[in-house]
View (cartoon, rainbow, N blue to C red):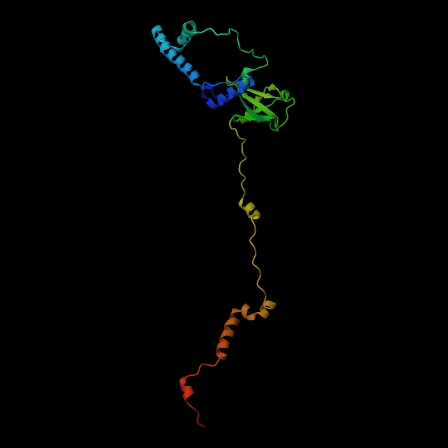
Length: 249
């Protein structure tokens, strides 16, 4: 059964259902958009509102049941006698409805679902299981037409026949499958799986060729001694007194 009442369904969805059903019956839908049709409808409503309300008030009718009985027994016969016009051609132009036509199925809101590998379908947050006795010719990924009818009932159609599906008891609470609990890892397990830090390259030994050929670069102390030795070997700048005096022998 469906939880959506007929009065609460979307108007556009209901209109699309009516259009599809009339198309299946080969009936053309003509909407009253012309001024002539609008005027006729407005005159009809105006007459009914003016006459019917006063008639109900005079008759002392105040309930829906009494009003419906008055319409069928008094008002409609009076209306037909007073305003009905004989047609120019008395022949009935209505076509007979074929016995193969199911109006409940035509005017039902239809959805399409695919059969899962476990022979279930999901509709309205519920899972429906196909019994073994009904699974003749049905395979996974077979399309199932779900009919939501006007009375709120559900019908399941596949392979030009209706199936009797059973509601899956484990899926009435939630529409989505239960998720497994998240995996927890201990500190020891995380430490074993964590990437190891990269080890620093070892320093070259004292006899390494790189140290022998680049002693100044490799040894900061040798660089300092080399700078001190180079500075001491250079002559000191001369002074004016040294340039003005001569030696006496």
